Length: 403
Image (cartoon, rainbow, N blue to C red; front, side, top):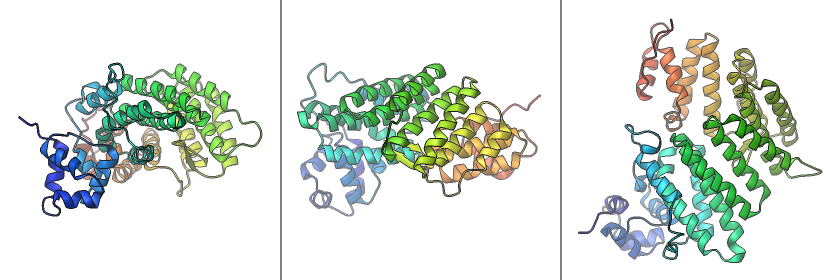
């Protein structure tokens, strides 16, 4: 009995009142055989690039074909989407010489898919991102396996990025150990790519995973060693300075979480000097850096060391025109709300949390701290209707009233 392809069924439902299979294939510029096999269940998926073209032809986002992934009842490594990512991340196909039959994507197409995945990440859209990662990991492995000698560096760079995105997504899904596995593989692949900035960026990602694991000493060691290897000598590019500055900020974050305020301050000061040289907010090698990032991380470090007055003073320096991705802006607002609550400004904290959730609802639902802060706000006086609604959306348990 043929097993129905969920992706194929979605394609069939979306196209049936608009296109024939042949028409859809022509508009999407894909083989009609692919569409036919997907709909008949003889294929269960296709390359990310192919699915993107089909989605565009149907006038929907890729997520509409990949389907919903959120599972409220499971957490961490028990989530079905995490299991699917794990199976792709730890595949043994290479050991069994079974990569030859994999669909090896054109590297330009794979690059477009990687760019799309980073866009989902920075927009905080972890559900569609988690859904596409198993296939993207398989494509990265196939690309590395089939790359010719001149292509190896580019294939390795793209595969490193896929693993870096995977690591960050797994962290958001609370699968920290798997995130570490993906981050280490990203570092290994970046070394094959032989781009010092990609190598530094993947090590920075590893440092972030270590922070989320609570391994603050190891994280600081990785960040500081990476920064030392990048120490600018002479004229360097703006991208070089941006990556270097981002690594310094990561080191400051790790130091602050150890209570090493002096070390954090020194690293922040050095990063501020680099930001003066770049002059603007930038994103290079998927590291966000610039004057706004220095303000953001300085605020974060002050919050971590419980210097809330300094945190509020620093947060006021954030430019309203900060050119940071939505995920970064939302993370800063979370620090601001935390600070406002600790300083006794409950209504201001409530307004900040609502503004954050309104701007980035998909990002917010994957964060733990908003639920903690909302739970605490519920115990302070009579909760407003909008706060109760926010608590409901975040599935926030009511916090115990402080003694």
